Amino acid sequence: MITVLALMTIGILLGFFINQRPKIIKAVDKMTNWAIYLLLFLLGIGVGLNKKIINNLPTIGVQAVILTIGALIGSLILAYITYNLFFKPKQ
Amino acid sequence: MKNSLIILGFFVLGLFLGLSKFLPDFIMESDFSMYALYLLMFLVGIGIGADRSSWKVIKETNIKIILVPLCVVIGSLLGVAAVSIFLPQIHLKEALAVGAGFGYYSLSSIFITQISGETLGVVALLSNILREIITLLATPIFVKYFGKLAGIACGGATAMDTTLPIISKYSGKEWAIISVFSGIVLTILVPFLVPFILEIL
Image (cartoon, rainbow over all chains, first blue to last red; front, side, top):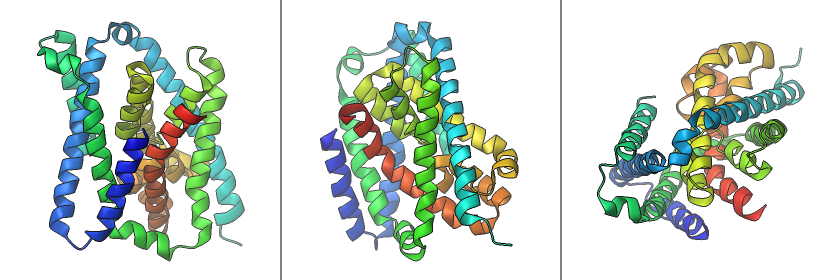
């Protein structure tokens, strides 16, 4: 994973220097989308071939729902506190 | 939204191909998703570096604004940690990694698949897609009961693009910049935080 982060950092620096060239940026955007499509496509294949996941799909779904509810409730409570403490307009 | 559907379309297409097993061996055996991930991260980096508006937003806003993505990070992680008590098959670390996707399902599920395997990758994919869908549907209610930051907090990384229209509609246009800022910070954070949680914690 260090390689991944190093590549991303190199990318950020490179991006910083080419931000005057809209053509390159547009091409990069397009390639980014296609890289994401490719990876999700490959993940799809991996999942389809993986009996363990396919047989446990309902369990995996329930786990995902529970984790989402947790993340959302946590975020909402902190957002409520942060808003009332720091962002609410003073009367 | 259109982009999300295309991404899901590719995932589903792969899923059916995998199920049907009509695949040449080299796809099933080689590990070229790792190289695709290298390419993706390099491109994502260029995108972040080249995006003038993200640097501008960061320069122009006052220090208080950093509290917004911070509260999303802390809230999401505490929340998933709390509910992981009900999930004996999922370690605390794994729950935290799923929560650290902040709705950025494409990248977080790719990372988690690479580090922890496909099962947790699918949990991350579903959970973070759901986060985006719930934000799109429930932001009006959340804003009513939890204040103007509620939509931004639920949207997480998606608050900069897919969920921005609904957030700016129900919290008000003046919150759009804060929403974009929070989304950008969280988007940049995902590729650092997810591997950190899984490999170092």
